[in-house]
Image 1 (cartoon, rainbow, N blue to C red):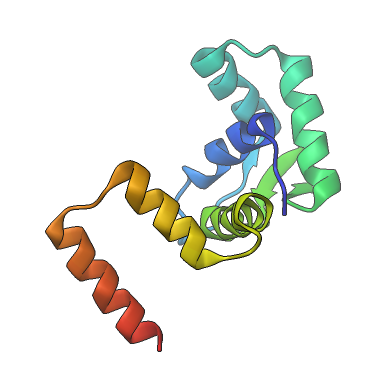
Image 2 (image 1 turned 30 degrees about the vertical axis):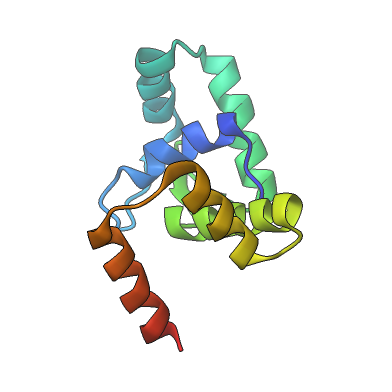
Length: 122
């Protein structure tokens, strides 16, 4: 699922709720948080919420325009990562990691954890 930066800001407010309770919150609460955080007005926030609903990322419940995240942060992160690897590295995880390591580098501890993760994935 591709979410634009503005949609991710709305989702972030929902994801900040207790994930175990899968708590839903009012659209008004999202408006209040994003107004304070980044200065969005009510119309902007409602427009972005509606786009998230159309994409199936948010469920709208009544009464009171209550919003609940239908996708997790992890699901969106995985989708975004796969799209990046497909777009920029022709789908090659190896090229992605090679580029990442060349540009950013990792510590010995990170390398050991990655090696362990790769071994466990086999």
